[in-house]
Amino acid sequence: MIETLLISALIIAIGMAFFCVKLFFKKDGKFSSQHIHDSEAMKERGIHCVMDQDREMRTPSKFAVSEH
Image 1 (cartoon, rainbow, N blue to C red):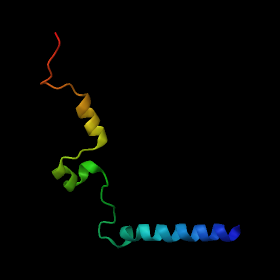
Image 2 (image 1 turned 180 degrees about the vertical axis):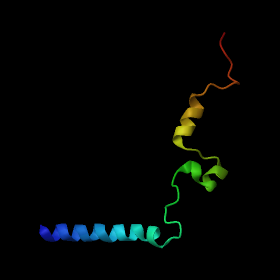
Image 3 (image 1 turned 45 degrees about the horizontal axis):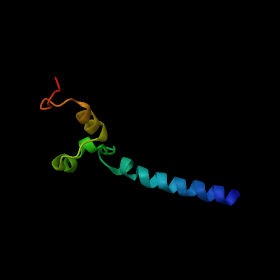
């Protein structure tokens, strides 16, 4: 049981070390944004965040035909 706990702690420590390498050795020391709306490739393809897409779909279209 204790061996499994120690191995798990070692694996987590190694993972955290690899995760932090970019923070320690990069000049700015920060991670780039992972949001879809910040990606140039996604902007070029016209892909938006699901929240933005939902907002667009809920906004009434000015071209909609009213039933009045």
